[in-house]
Image (tube, rainbow, N blue to C red):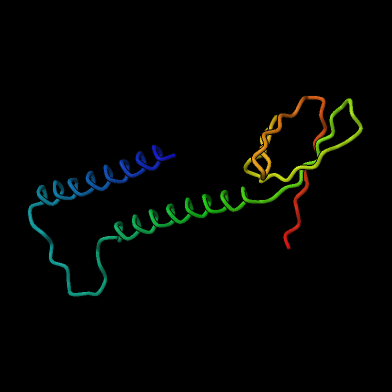
Length: 128
């Protein structure tokens, strides 16, 4: 995940420096600067502002996804495990982040492995 962030920042920096040096080359190749009448309108589009807005939106979006993933992982679930050969079932309390395909870790720290023939019923525990 951190590698993706570094690659994104490297691409942004490369684009910034490319545009900065390209503008200097274009300005040097033009014979004379044209005179712009006094107006309040900036003749250049606000690329820097647009870049900052996009970076901020990307950071806010990434932070919100990470926060939602953390919040959703803290959801308490009730897992009812019924072995195939036995008629009795056992109930466990599990956080959603600790529930995997063939095993889960209870709130107390017990690791339970599930066989192919076992039946699981997972329900969300209502919040008080």
